[in-house]
Image: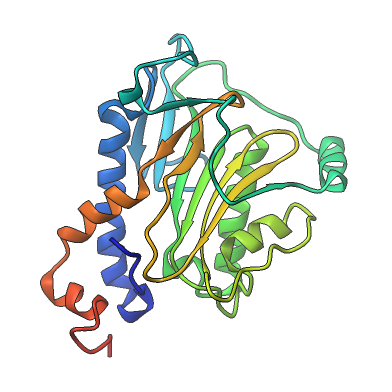
Length: 252
């Protein structure tokens, strides 16, 4: 199913779809895609921020980064993600960060290892909203939490290079130019001391690639964005599906 033009509907309609998509993603992760010892939960507090999906590791559970049956969906570092772009942060940013940052780890509890974020209109409606979202991603990466960001809205006044461009610029790296014919972005960030990003640009009408979500520095899973998007879209009201499919007038 191709990606729809979500600018055709109001923020509340996208929020309803967003909530359904998060539910399908969480279910897919928990019914076998995540390796043993990991689980996903939606809209839980992580510090002062609220991510869409948390991936957590059960305390005391052994790591399962080893060959597993194909239905587990587990990939290893010797099979790199199949995205069209891989970016590595500026060394200057890394050196400055090492001088001023301490890693603080909690010795108990269900530790967070990865976040999945789906951008909404509210994340882009003003400069402070963009800055808050960028800070959330940067803060997660600083403490070793990997992040997958899905941005199905084109660049706007407050994020002229899209949300990924705003995030990448915060690493003191050159702004990532968004292709004019593919203004939507899927970006997976690795919480390595030298940040890496795996990026796919898409357009309205394109299918979504499965995107890597790293669970540690050695391995990742491929998140089935397309199939879970389809499942969420099927449950939308017929009226709004008509708007998105150009069968009805756009939002007033």
